[in-house]
Structures are given as C-alpha cells and as structure tokens.
Amino acid sequence: MQLDSLYQEIILDHYRSPHHAGLTEPYDVEVHHVNPSCGDEVTLRVELDGDVVAGVSHHSVGCSISQAATSVMSDLVIGKPVTEGMATYEKFLELMQSRGNAEPDEEVLEDGVAFAGVAQFPARVKCALLGWSAWRDATAQALAKSASSKTEGVSNA
Image 1 (cartoon, rainbow, N blue to C red):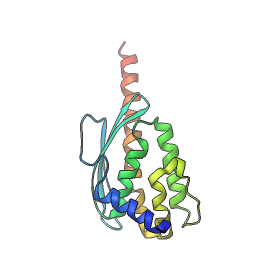
Image 2 (cartoon, rainbow, N blue to C red; image 1 turned 60 degrees about the horizontal axis):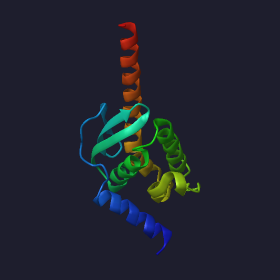
Image 3 (cartoon, helix red, strand yellow; image 1 turned 90 degrees about the vertical axis):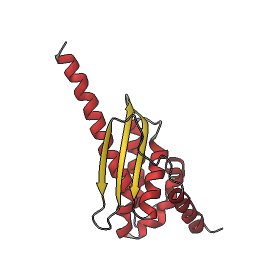
C-alpha cells in the first residue's frame, strides 16, 4: 500500500469514527469556530486539570479534513500538559505551512502525519487547522479563567 493511500485511509477512519466527538461535561470553556472560506464549523469544549488537558470534546460539521484533524488533535492533547499540546500544535502548524516540503515528525504528530499531503493545497490548510485553532483558543481562555479565579481568591483573602 502506498503511503498516500495509507494517509487517506487514516483521515477517512478519523472522519467516519471521530474520537472524542459529542460535547461532554464537565468542561471549563466552550468555543465555536467557523472557517469562512468553506463553512466548516466546530464547537469544542476543553477541561483542564491544573496545567494538564483533562478533556476535549467536539461537535464538528464540515469536510473530512476538518473533522478528521479535530479527532486527531483531541487524541494528541488529552492527558498531556498544555505546554506539550501547544508544542504539538506548533509542529502541526509547521507541517501545514510547509506546502508539502516538510518531513512530518511521526513521534510527535502520530496520526497527524496523514495530513502532510493537505499542506500542498493552501485552500485546505484552514480546514486542517480549524480544530487546532479552536483548541488553542479554548485552552487560552481556560488558563486565563483559572488564573483569574486564583487571583480573586488571593485578593478576597
């Protein structure tokens, strides 16, 4: 089996059976992101336990690339420190911005390497990054919310 065929199969598997799909509770922050160029949408919830991503759940509507990338992203960040999740995002972003000229880091990106071919199509890069952008936004909000509640607790003491 050719590598491109294998990558297509990974994307289709995540599209057909997305991991962590369906909005769950508890969660710290919920965000809704839309890709205006194609209409893909994702509603994503993030739960943090200190600085660790305790949970990510999502409801996605759109193409196979956006839905599969959100599924892969959730697998890659759940159970990891936020800093590690952000570093993984940076590796994925680097891959997406490479126009197909980067060698993906399979140890870091795992199933995310399947999106290497997507980088050759600039119009589809936004699709692959939609769930990641929502996760970054929700995580930043959750961290800010946590820091704010800690600050309020100190000032009220």
